[in-house]
Amino acid sequence: MKYYVLFGPPGAGKGTQAGAMVERYNLCHLSTGELLRAEIAAGTPLGLQAKSLIEAGNLVPDSVVEGMIESKFRDTQGVDGFLLDGFPRTIAQARALDKMVEVTGCISIMIPDSLIQERIAHRAHIEGRADDARSEVVQNRIATYHAKTEPLIDFYRSAGKYYEIDGTGTIEEVRQRIFSAMDKL
Ligand code: ADP
Image 1 (tube, rainbow, N blue to C red):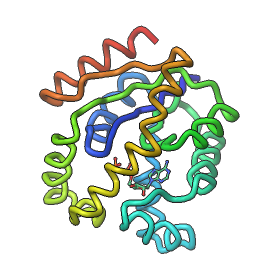
Image 2: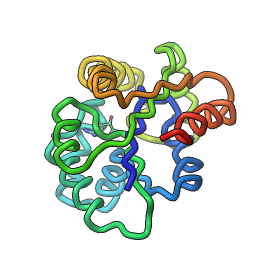
Image 3: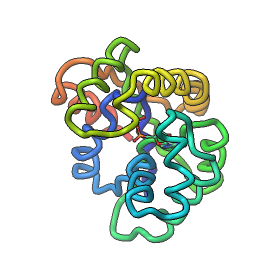
Image 4: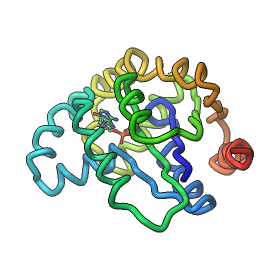
């Protein structure tokens, strides 16, 4: 089994690229953001707990997302691996993941901060996500990314598992860069 971490700042295009990646490599796409939004939509206790945190641009507790990922690992069959999108987002989550499985590689889509805001503003019109609509929430997500998530770059780099992809340009250009990195893994 392959375990890929799809990494990048909010708005880098992880969700956009994930579809092509899961198809080409027969992976199960696990997006913690999507899983959490499904819990919110279903009105579960977990969803209720997550809603206010997400809508303020904060992270949900590590234990919550770790539990969701672990149960998906257990319940999913018929794939060659997993594409983890939005997880891990903290060093603690990365350590928890290392206890569950051996990560194959971290595919990191990089864009500058200026492009982050532009892409999220654009997505707010299309997808109508509550956490995309308010600029102070987006600012907080970017700050949270720099403070809590960016340290994962060094974490995976020192493990020799970090593959950085230039996330600027067209969707197709970025996809080709990702494929040429993943074909070697
Ligand atoms: P984006 O790609 O724009 O960052 P996501 O859909 O991945 O958005 O995540 C939306 C929100 O869900 C995050 O801002 C955070 O509040 C919560 N979330 C998602 N994944 C995690 C995680 N691994 N740990 C903690 N919170 C998470």
